[in-house]
Image (cartoon, rainbow, N blue to C red; front, side, top):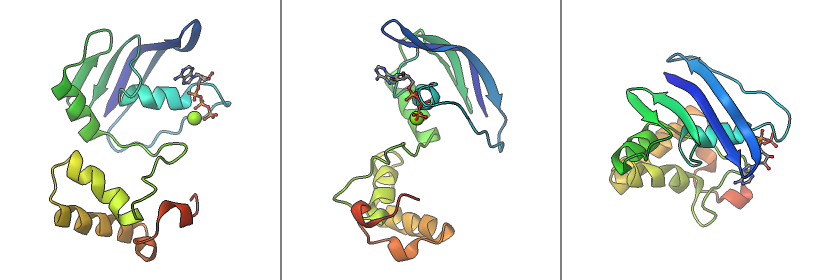
Length: 144
Ligand SMILES: Nc1ncnc2c1ncn2[C@@H]1O[C@H](COP(=O)(O)OP(=O)(O)OP(=O)(O)O)[C@@H](O)[C@H]1O
Ligand SMILES: [Mg+2]
């Protein structure tokens, strides 16, 4: 589950997120809808601490984080292992195939061996019917 309580984030004088609170029970799917610039991406980046919120409490699974305190490196690592994000501009490694783009975080964040990671990456591609694209580079993939 994800629980956010009183999360705020400003960039300079611009208060982008003000006292955001919501809860997503395990297994639920939540869609965030709002105009461009409303702060949707900023909120997602705050959830995995790619942006540091100014204040707020964050709960992701068993992890409880008080954003106004310094977050220990170990907690940050656990949070990153428990979350995933597709970036708006994809942020894929241009010089790596689709398969290797999926395998790389499994090696660096989850400690898989290279062969385990590639095997798991292939299974994940199979699940979304994209094995034909496994050895394609990002530049040759469609956005979807
Ligand atoms: N690193 C940053 N530094 C300064 N301002 C930022 C930064 N990131 C986002 N902003 C500002 O915060 C506001 C919210 O941006 P954000 O990208 O979260 O919007 P969004 O809802 O995801 O928009 P879109 O629908 O276009 O993706 C915008 O005004 C943006 O310019
Ligand atoms: Mg966005």
